[in-house]
Image (cartoon, rainbow, N blue to C red):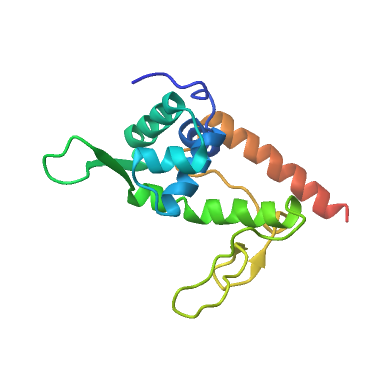
Amino acid sequence: MKQRKLDGMNCSISNALELIGEWWTFLILREAFFGSRRFEDFQQHLGIARNILTTRLKKLSDGGVLERVPVKEGAKRHEYRLTPMGRDLYPILIALTQWGDRWLHEKGAPVRFVEHATGEEIADVAIMSKSGQVLDARDLVLKPGPGANEETMERLRLLNVAWEKHQQSK
């Protein structure tokens, strides 16, 4: 397996960014969610150079985010469809869009996300407790998961010790 630049990090974010962290990739994903499937559609809507688009589509296909399938049986032309792994990125794209609308787009949202069944705009993406309470970063504690290595476990232990001291000093 090819060694990735961020392999030394015991971090799911670094692993995700290795696959989808380049800005053209997010725009390609946006187009896939907007319904683009063919190479020409992606290129037309994005104005991206063919060689860059080819490289990004291949990486997304090889990584399991998109599936490259023939347009019809026996056809030489292909289209790109989101896989379940790719569809799981939708909340991330919506959250990034909502953040951009809130902080970077002065004239308001260029695109609204509306629930098909009700015609109502969706709520902002939020982190919620299991009981449905909206949480922010101050409400969370980081604990080692099953994939944590020794370095990550020690870092989180020190982080939590510092947090406990901070809470006691209040």
